[in-house]
Structures are given as C-alpha cells and as structure tokens.
Length: 115
Image 1 (spheres, rainbow, N blue to C red):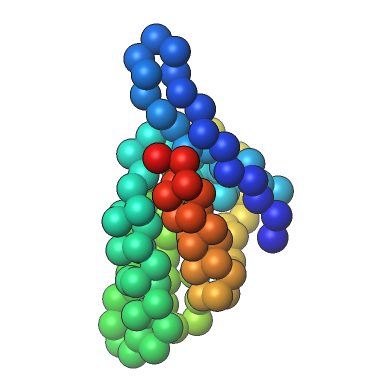
Image 2 (tube, helix red, strand yellow; image 1 turned 120 degrees about the vertical axis):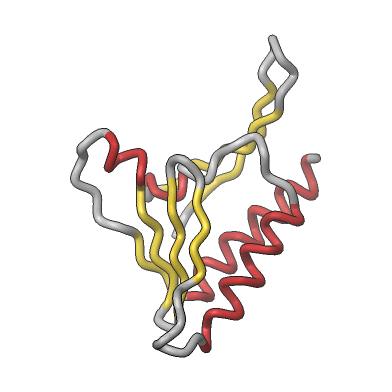
C-alpha cells in the first residue's frame, strides 16, 4: 500500500491541513485539519483491541463526514462515504489490522514531525 503525507497551510486563515495522497482514494479521506497524535493513538488502540473481539460484540467504529472505519476480529474495513454521497460505485477498502495500524502509525509520526 503506497501513500504520501503532506501538510498544507491555508494562507488566508493559517489553518493547517494534513493531506494524504494514496493509490486508494478511501485513504485520501483521512485528510483533515483536526488531527492530533492523541486522536490517532486512540484509533490505533481501539483497532488493536478489536483483533480479538468476540463475534457477538459490536465492531469498533470511527468516522468523519467522508469516511467510516469498522474494525473487528477479521480486520479493518474503510467505507468511502464521500463517494457514496456522489452515488459512485466504490468498493470498501479491506485491510488487515497490521496494514491499517502501520498506516496510522506512519500518519502519527508525520504529524509529530510536522506540528
């Protein structure tokens, strides 16, 4: 899975956005201005704890207006809500726990280095 992180500052407001360029557009929907290392760590911890989730338990769900993440004992599913609103046919992205956690750790490191 290839991806690249970017930081962009909006000149008129001074707001900083963390952007993601990825082969799979679903990952691009993580781009936002509100990311903190604490928020990323919380997501990583919740996904990690769902590796051994009992089948009768609800999955961990996190989302923003463009993306929803579901994690259970089988892995992680990313749903592109932006594409759904545009009535585009887009398959959800299925990742292993390790793939998703590696992505999030890389994102966290980028934010730490660029905050």
